Image (cartoon, rainbow, N blue to C red):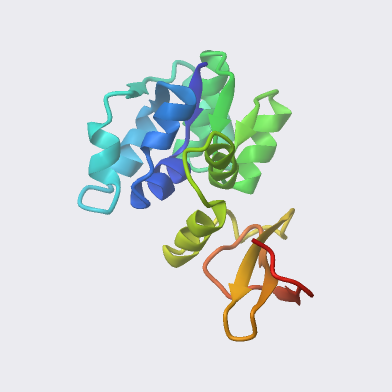
Length: 193
């Protein structure tokens, strides 16, 4: 499966020390020059940068159609623009991208896409992790943000056990902004495992 990635999924997973999930789920990951520049060169010394640079299964590719990249630059940053164009040029089966505007543009161009949260869900389904909730909590702690410039298009629910009153709660997070408090809590009448 040919997969192209934008910066944010690489950065988020590398910061959590779970970059290897991408290799387990997809094998080789292609990134455009602009993503390499953003994550590795401009990000030198930042958490996750060295992990991305040293992963032999992440390969850097040059986008051919600079005009297509320039046309997207009115709406997206350079990395997102190159990732979308590279995915089209390479006829990738999947694009890894978190930003809402980039996802909409990718979809309008017929690209299948998934974001960091979707990757966490797949990792759980493939038994690469025991708890998706724990990973979501880690994403919250590192200040992971999908895209705060757009209204939420979905919500993230997590079940939390409250040891004080021995009940479970469902915490509701804004699907576009992790790092804040839950926007809602629902106490359940029984404990949920």
